[in-house]
Each structure stands twice: as structure tokens, then as C-alpha cells.
Image 1 (tube, each protein chain N blue to C red):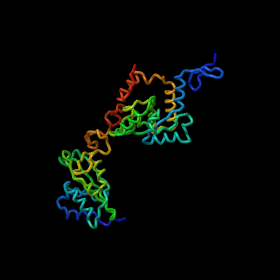
Image 2 (cartoon, each protein chain N blue to C red):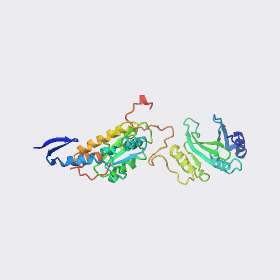
Image 3 (cartoon, rainbow over the protein chains, first blue to last red):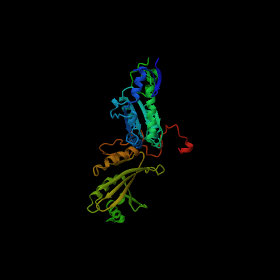
Image 4 (cartoon, rainbow over the protein chains, first blue to last red):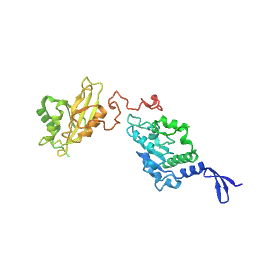
Length: 186
Length: 171
């Protein structure tokens, strides 16, 4: 019998020369260490996010960035900054263009809740138009916090069941947001 | 640099040209000539200032509105033109009272192209209608908005927010 290890938070049975684990786990590990984020940055949080990408913090070290500036190839939407109500349909369309599975990281107070912009023209949190997986508080959050947020996304990605996106619960979530889907929910 | 003209000189010239269309002179602390004029004469006045051989008021700085809900009827809205003569380093404001029930004034896009977006903004925020404007539609807010948010009867804050206690946020 081989040794059961939990390397990098995934369970595996190790024999000499090969390793046994579940397909879910392998895919989860692969996905989480090769995130393709689409940065949707509108203000100062976007600058902090740029700092996170730059050499001082360099999130590429953790498999957190292969920037995709097309939603079609992205699997993580990073919304950093104030979203006005006029921009909300654009954000929703970008989200809808992303292929499943997809995650959303909400960076900063404005994207999370409207922040200081408690006003008629600003969307009071992007979770009013799209579902959000992880919120990063701060105004703006430091790169360490953003990295922590992406680590939380990675944890979600790593442990997500391959069946989740076909579940009735997920369909209900998308239906709540009036997002078109072809999940049959069975 | 000193301006070539004093406020009095320009005001007197306007008064002489337009007479009763000049309603009053407003005292301002910034030494900035501010004149209330009849809205139906404003277009002609701006054209005259533009074409004037000496004044050459040929730069439009801004157009905006103000809402005074407590003003007497027919004067609730004020439209403000900020004009600038670059050659003479001279600035002036023209203000027009407009009724909130029928806030209509002629466009000045035929004099200043820059007025196009400024008038759209003023329409968007205050609901002032600029007659003969080539494209009078909202510019800043989403098209589906059904009110003019800078009018005082509307809340500045988003009314759907749940996390703020009115006692602490002065809402």
C-alpha cells in the first residue's frame, strides 16, 4: 500500500513511480494553478491589481495570472473598481461571454458595495448583476489582500466538484440573476 | 494679466444693445460679470457677444443648471452660460430663469459646437430642453433613467442600499 499524502491540499495515494487520485482532484489542481483572469479594472483598485502583477508582488509565481483580455478564454473575472449603473449591462455581458466554469473576484469596497459612492449613478455592488465568489475588502486593498483573495478563489477552484455547474442549485443561482443558461437542472 | 474691459463697460454695452432683456446684475465675490437675462434673448446675446468687433467672446467654458425649488413660480430653474473672451482675458456669466414646468430654451450649438455635449449634460441632469439641438439625449446617465437627478426633489443617494443606518449617515 502506498502512502497517502495531501500535497498542495489534494489527496493522493503514492506508489513508486505513479500516483493515484480522483479525476476531479487532478482537474481542480490543474485549473487552480493556471487561472486565466480577465481584469475588469475601472479605478484605483485596478492600480493595486497592476501592482500585484508587477515584479514586487508578481502573482504569476502562484499560477494566478495568465491575463486574458478576452472573456472567451478567461475563467476568472476580476472586477476592481467603481461600476456605474451605465456600465452594469456591459459587465454582465462580459460575464455572460465567459465560458463555464467561471469565477468572479470582487476587489475593493466599490465593486463589493458601492463603497463611498452612495449615489444615484453608481451600482451598489456588482453582486446585483452577477454572482460573486470572493470579495476583497479595502479601499483600495493592498496587493497582499488581492493575492489572498485569489488564493481563496484557488481554494474554491481546487475543491469544486465537476458536477457543480450542472446542478439545480447553480441553475437557480443563474436564474436569479437572469443569466441565460442551458443547464437542465437534473 | 489685467482684462482689457471692465465689467461695467461690457454690462453697459449689453444694456444699450438689449435694453429690457437684461434683467439684473448679480453681485459676485469673484469679480466675475454675472447678468440675468431673458431666456428668449439669450441666443441672440451670445451671438452678439461672439460677433462683437472688440469683445470677441468666442469661447464657451461651460453650460450648467441650478435648481432652486423655493424660488417663485416660473423661476425654479436657472441656466448658466460661462463665456470667455480669450483675446481680451475677459469672462462673463449669463443666467436665465426657466420655469420647471416648461424649461425650454434655444440651443447655442449653432454658435459653439462645444455646446452640444454641455447641453446634453444639462438636459440629462436638470431636464432643460434645448430647442433645435441636433441630438438631445442623455449623455452621462443610463438611457433607462426616468428622471433628472440633479433636481432637488430626488435623493442624491441610491435608495436601495440596505447597509446604512440613516441616523449615522444623514440620509
